[in-house]
Length: 366
Image 1 (tube, rainbow, N blue to C red):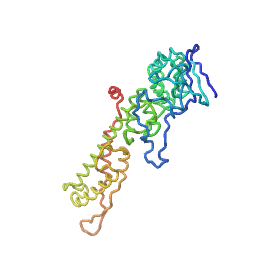
Image 2 (spheres, helix red, strand yellow):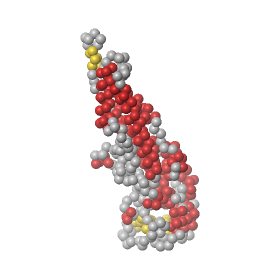
Image 3 (cartoon, rainbow, N blue to C red):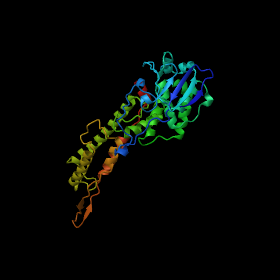
Image 4 (tube, rainbow, N blue to C red):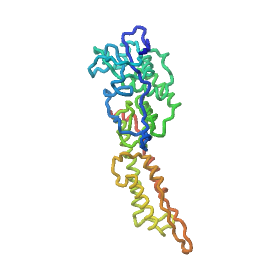
């Protein structure tokens, strides 16, 4: 077994060992390889775990851990003796318990208990950065971080409850991240990383932008949060907004349907002539489109459907081509009315009503 030693404190009284430290978090599964059109969406992970059930890192719990020398890692769970598993590598951090206890309630609880225990492994680079900050080794702390590394640190900060201790650096990191990394306009792994970072580091503008994308492109409230510290109230609020957005679309389409169904409908092109035929064609095309997508009955919660998907599918529906005779009856011309024009107006109006989530309101709501 290879071992790396990081002497964080010149007079350490505590040793933290990461066995087989992970280098990745938030593994993104490509569902399109299994024929799923909804890339990035999955119900295999619920985002409803509480903090005490969440553990940093990724993978099987039994195969990942750090060892806090001679002390339990979670005071709410009984410690147990380290096993004799063969480890490929480990990283040792020689640290000060006093610094850790002052900065982190989690470490304070852990270090007040006796015994030897195991916990999940942490990302080695992110953990080293955190230890350097907590031990005031400011020159060893990078001033710029990638989105990936910042998300790893966000996981540790949330888990170890030490946001205040890293506030000066987190403000610097997020300020530079805003200028260098764009928020995706598609529901991708990076969007989930941004959701985590903007929540943990309290970035209200970015949080609103990220959640608006999630609202328009998520398909239910159990989208995969990739085991990141994104609380249930956030994913639930995203899904509530998704449902309201789709309800707005359905309401607009139903209003259109009523318009075409009414005997009072007047064709905007012929100004009354051929209004019956025009209304029938548009009503039939609209009804079939809504039925095909599964929104005709307007039954919530519209699981499996995203706001954006409905918009794209409705906008791409074609209107049957039909011809009308001229007033002289000598020739025929194609009737110009098209369902897409009406659908576009509904989509534009519904899209205006979709806003990202307000970070402050979510925080106040507990």
